[in-house]
Amino acid sequence: MSIAGEGCEILVPFSERKTLQEIERSLTTTYKKNVWGKFIKAINDYNLVEEGDKVAVAISGGKDSLILAKLFQELKKHKKVDFEVEFIAMDPGYHKEIRKLLEENCKFLEIPVKIYESGIFNVIDKIAQDYPCYMCARMRRGSLYEYAQSLGCNKLALGHHFNDVIETVMLNVIYGGTFKSMLPKLKAQNFENMEIIRPMYLIEEDNIKNWIQSAGIWPLNCACMVAAKKIGNKRYEIRELIKNLKAQNKDVDKCIFRSQENIQMDSVVGWRDKKGEKHSYLDYYDDDAMMFDDPSDF
Ligand SMILES: Nc1ncnc2c1ncn2[C@@H]1O[C@H](COP(=O)(O)OP(=O)(O)OP(=O)(O)O)[C@@H](O)[C@H]1O
Image (tube, rainbow, N blue to C red; front, top):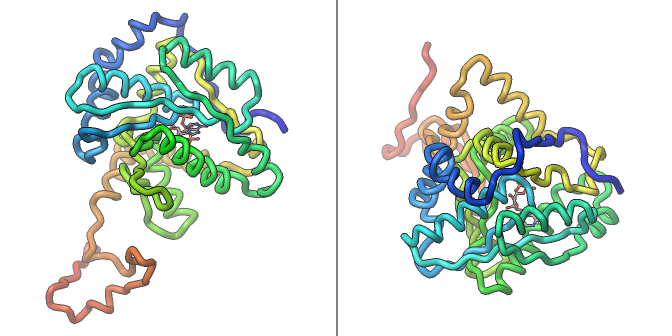
């Protein structure tokens, strides 16, 4: 097994490492509008953190989950909502240098992380030869839920951000032939009283990159030891596509994001309901309560 695959971006710090105090302060000063403000907005708009919650912040050691952990520590200082927080990291069988980087970054950033071993890489490497990512993601999710629950948590916070959301929408349209998004909050299927939350839903990735690079921190970039060079990375392809489209229309990303909260049900040909049953607009064609609209400009 080898570390890293193609398409992994290495984020090189812009300068020497800043002090912890400077790094923490920057979240509510330099990054007040584009990071902190959007974090708070998502928490309020989607009801992500509520009184009495115990949130497990899932840390992989990458830039996204490191900033997420710092945002939660900041939120706790503000004491607007009474909640508890745990920081958890699952070691799926990382290379020892990667594990060291994760530990050192958490130590420097004063994130009291609880690291546990799952051995997932070994299992995946044996049973999912060609497409390991899907199974790995499922096993990872289950393992994190289980550990979070064992600590008495009712929510699992993940580091997905605005760009993950729009890439998911585009991936589903272009490769899945369906319109599906990533949700800001979701009930766990097999774990009672457990929800996933995505508090960075509105934060654009460039701001996260900027924060970590200005802080002078080397985050964990590509820690996968299974998929490395085995598969083409479709997400990477979509990222490039959106970047190219943005060169012609700078608001493309915002439009993709808006499309998933602004679906016009009177102009949709077919959909599946929660039970997976298919519906056609023709089934409702003579229903007076349903008026269908023609958005074409003929
Ligand atoms: N080994 C792990 N332990 C704990 N949490 C994890 C782990 N791997 C992933 N996560 C959580 O799942 C989220 C999405 O995982 P993904 O592999 O897509 O990471 P990412 O988008 O590169 O984010 P990051 O920069 O945090 O690694 C992470 O932000 C983190 O919250």
